[in-house]
Length: 253
Image (cartoon, rainbow, N blue to C red; front, top):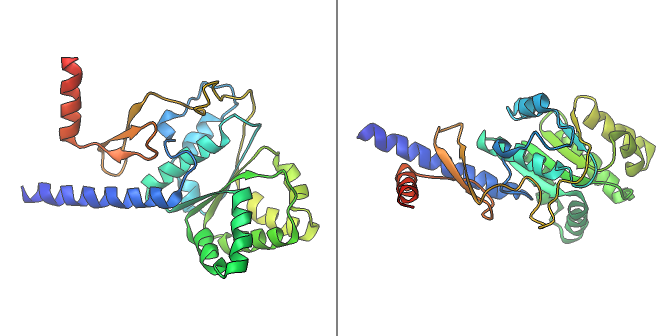
């Protein structure tokens, strides 16, 4: 009995830490997870590479991931699925859309909160910059991006999504000296997922990779089933008692 109580307490603490990491990550697609990826979708997703990325070894090695492709092929969703797996594996994540991030950085310079925001962006194990480009950066944005990339280089991983191919990013940054320095740190040891194909968004507007209302995934750290609500954002553990009750209700139905 004592061992069971200890195991339950350890599981509860692990679950609490996972919830905290997911909340702090603020993922755009909180319901995304690698178990729900549709490899049959016509978007040229390299299954072997994606499954390798899902091990999170690239995060442990402080490498980057560049995800490119046209609108609607699932760049953001796939990125959030990898981020959710990183949270499950114990890594800290911070998600930001690039247009909103630069607006927040500009405000932070004015109200004195830049140092705090900069720490948030540079201390996470994985920083996701979603929707990079196509607008050209201004001088302040170039300097801020350079500082973030430089501080994270060799210490943390970055995941960047963009509709633009990587060879067009130099033009987005603009000033050649900054562009060379930033891209040298981002590109040379980065993995790449170059997606292509028609938009996968459904007419209902519910987004891509939509799944049934409730799904179960496995928590690799504890081996417990996790029940995930479609509209609820993040996955939470389902206790054995709750699962037994649900299965009983299903048999009655």
